[in-house]
Length: 524
Image (cartoon, rainbow, N blue to C red):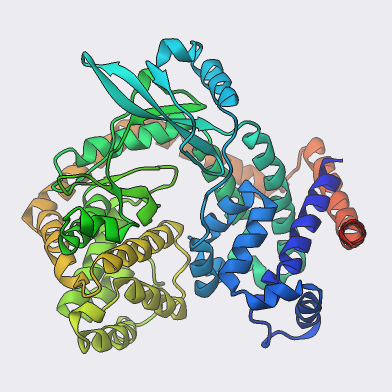
């Protein structure tokens, strides 16, 4: 029954996308055979009024009908242009995570169940919700902190949201498995693996203790940063379903007119924003991955404060070096070095020619240097870079795609504040300082220290590794002499799984067709 329910939910989702004109808005002129027939049929079945809307508006309406888990699916896919394409990723990134509030009584019950204390004992006062998203909503409150009454924001999980998400995730996994089984071209995109990443991301986002940990880490990382900070967390009033943190008084960065009226220097804000993001990325390897203007406030003294840390990104030191040398190489027009970095990092297979790859990079970099500084888009550069690396068999790197998406958003915010924003001039001090500290003499010493630490750890494990190697050698010799044997239960499980997949494949289209017919009858 669970699988049948997943088919029905999947059919309903497909029907809504068709009716709201989302499928019809996709480019289908290049399709052939059944895919083209399906696209043409979707155009005929879409609502007439949808033809007057552009694709982002159609997406927004469809997702609003589908529910909160589809908002998160859209926002997640916006970080994977390798899966949905750059144009669709751009449209999905515009989805707004705004929902209706739920009753205050339910919020109070969730807080008391999570923290085991009455709301009146936890907070001096507790107000009605002021904002709501797909997973949680925010209430104003106040606590006694360091002998003073202090305002706080209380984020509370939406009731029943986990069950709804898990049900819809089952449908997403079903769609991914059907894609891998019946659409050969989709297999290289690894849809099941993409869905697993979405499931893990969603589970983390629905545990507010983990968001609190991200805020706390970024708070520590940025406590001495000029012009940027992160709220503090009240851990005594934080649990799985509730997060209490500092209340921020400031102007949203999305309200440019209010920023001007408050007398803020917009050019300086744009510079501080991009430098802060690069500093977090290169110095810490940990960054806020949802830095749209609605999540950024400007305080009276001009300090930028970031909120909503449900999505964060991490990159290892190798990726940080990769990013810094790429940016610096394009700044200095050292395309050969940019190419060598790709090969050293193992991103481009060694059978390709470094000189040919450097030539392709020059084709990206030279036109950029022919433009005025304020027209150069670093986000566009990264997009072109990923397109070129595909020609040289560079495998998809999810952590770099999330970084690229965040770079696009941050650059867009900076250019909204200052249309003549010079991205290169703002980025150069942060990038060059990081390279001097990590790739110069100090960096060599740090790498050597890390290398000796790794060698010492390996030496301590040497006896255990030797024993494992000897045991593995004996098992390989035995397999060579007697062949590979499967446990009877393993063989039986393989047989049952194959039979189940075959049976599912035969009935999949029938179930979807019947479900669509039932939905059409109900709507029509």
